[in-house]
Image 1 (cartoon, rainbow, N blue to C red):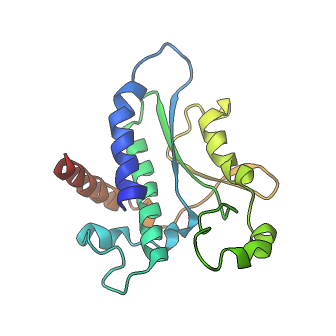
Image 2 (tube, rainbow, N blue to C red):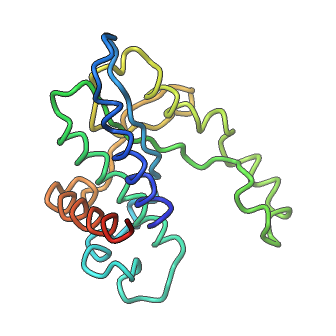
Length: 186
């Protein structure tokens, strides 16, 4: 949660005053948060109640903790978009999909999975498509509070996030908990 949620929130909220400045440009400033479809495994509601337990009292699971942090990215995106309504700043989230990176390179099994990774996973360039699209495409001016991913045909489309990630009340609770943590960390 610290690396995937608290850190990006800290950075974004510190840069927000600069993004909100009127530059005279007709284009809107853009914030792009990288989430994941694994957010569906997340338990932000549990984390809000027990911040030291991203797995809801069950044995620690890296995937569940990761999913919680990525669901938090979506809550932050949606809530920030609501708070910035009417301002010249857009905030969207993207999912790169399953990308063939070297994140697991230090695990013993990494070399054994090379053939599978090349066959089943997207290239880093394909995974970057949604981020680049949201950050640079002129058609994205004014588009905010959405979640995008890439199709197999190298197109970018809006994707639907979990019901839990769309809970506006939970987004506000997470916002408040995150603000308290940021205050504590000062």
